[in-house]
Length: 242
Image 1 (cartoon, rainbow, N blue to C red):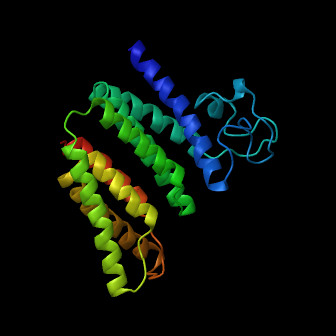
Image 2: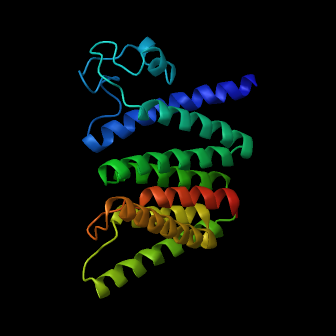
């Protein structure tokens, strides 16, 4: 029980840093300095008022300096990160747990940024790639699974780009989405990446239909694909392991 609490606390701290990344990367701000500040009044937040989850509760969701409202997404992201780390150490053993959580937090951050900003920071894709490469080079004996998955991912890019140019004479799927498919292919494997793409497409289609029913059909509506790709990748990894 005590160990679980420590993992939850650590996960919430990581979640606090994820909030920094989510806020700053799309704005081209450094994630290192300056230290945390209120997005309303730019006042620096002292460490004793920057405790994950608890600070939001004790301050009633408001900045202590300007009383500006703090978005509820900050504690939600911290809680999700904390729960994810706790579940990870329960389900997986070292070093697989490290890789899974590494991939999870990257997919989580990418999903939030893509949903809000419709952009994918290349630095996050590079970070995912380096972590995945390090894991396979250090702990993986048989590299056929990641290599075959990588090849399938690259093949998917060639197929999508070729099909788009043939039909629409332009690229309709974002390059960030395509690059992420390659990375996920190296992580999940050959069959799993196919299932991930299929499930993500179904989820995106359902979401688009629901959006159309609620808000009316809009052919020009852009639907961020990363959230559905991320959800699908996590589900496939959990329920259809290698």
